[in-house]
Image (cartoon, rainbow, N blue to C red; front, top):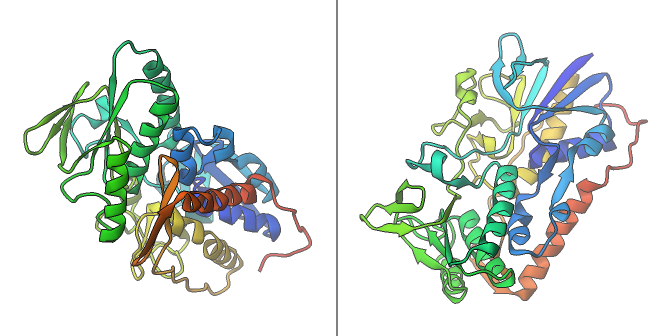
Length: 379
């Protein structure tokens, strides 16, 4: 019996499990290794922080989904690979042998990206840690005798949505909370169009969020130092800078791109080890580079499942070309959002309702284990 190891419970692997539940693998032992028993859907995280959702509305329990797919869930974090002997090791030095490995461990934030980040800031990822920290912060803010300041570092979609969500939550708790967004010298949402940036800039100003377009060069216990020499007061600092690669990818001998992400071909297969596959934010398709975004991770689930099935059966793999353009729906704190699709953009409460329907449909699809068709053989 062949052994398939799914390392990480990210968006792509959730899709893999759902497809394996509908069409089970034959004679394959499947193990899912994840440090958490649930996936918190990143697309709904700002809505939870803003107070629009209960946390249980934003999560997918991995155990029922794994069980429906005939997989075991092992709560651990893969920290090292022995590719010669095909063994994965957890942080607790547990050995998990495999024949085929799939990586969907998600992005990390480099703790050394900004001096003081590891000691004095709250990183966006892992999301579970942010959730615990935010719940403590919210209780503290509500009880504080004087006004507090939260600084969000990062001018991408994650940083913008977080800053706006926090500003909205401060109005509903209520608490005397000031929010400032350090977007960096690259400016606000540099990968999106001028029109979208203008829309969000106007909304940021209307929501009372202070926008600083300068780089954060050091984070203190209650300060953020800027590149131009300015210093911001900050009672809590949340860092939502771009995704970084886990260092153990390259240290294990996997081929990586220039930033350290797992390098994969058009089959989502490692360019150096054909028995290793990777998708989501931890991987880079060298022939079809796309932004590190949950949109692309979700879409990779189906082709990844297909090629894992084929690799285990010794059949030819199928090429996958990700879409060139993705729809972005950016929440603006209250039940209002901005849509971006290439050069087209729009905003309004109707965009929020659109986003809400998409997000709830995603959760509903995976939160209920699929009907298992055990009569379908692998192939």
